[in-house]
View (cartoon, rainbow, N blue to C red):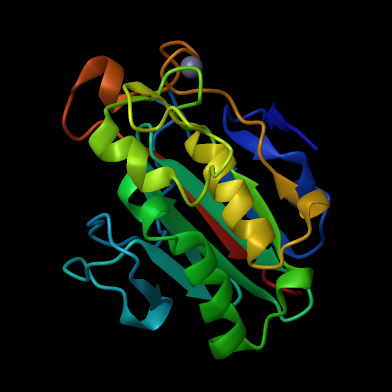
Length: 221
Ligand SMILES: [Zn+2]
């Protein structure tokens, strides 16, 4: 498992790319968003919406669908973009998990919602945790750090200025929710120190510069 660059300049999870019936892409600063995907007004919540509930004004941070040819997406610049696919129940989800969403555990919320709404079993889910700020660069104060104590119980430094690895946090939440570790692709580049091909809110502080991550079921012919 790893991330590779597609000929179009997207980052692709080799885990998801190796599965039948699904298309996905993680955009960069150089590659504009694909047209035609559904996305929400993101509010750092744990709200998960079905694609049919999506509108330009709809607020939430995860979208899912089991309809072929419908692409769902999230926009990020340091926050974690998480794409989920269940090849058994044929359902996909795009999740925005910034530090607030991670503290709210939107990742496991999405796993639970796919179960209750679509019959997805966690053991069938495959996940790609895309380019986002890494543990190398995400500096937090104690007011944020202490909120990660349940996720990183082994750490005694979260009450001091330190760094937090959001991608590892999301990976652990998925594993705890029952997604097999071998079905999680989590080694994408860091947006902060990965170079200018990535937008990074913490590095550049430019409003509106966000990269897209999209996933959808291929139309069967
Ligand atoms: Zn970094």
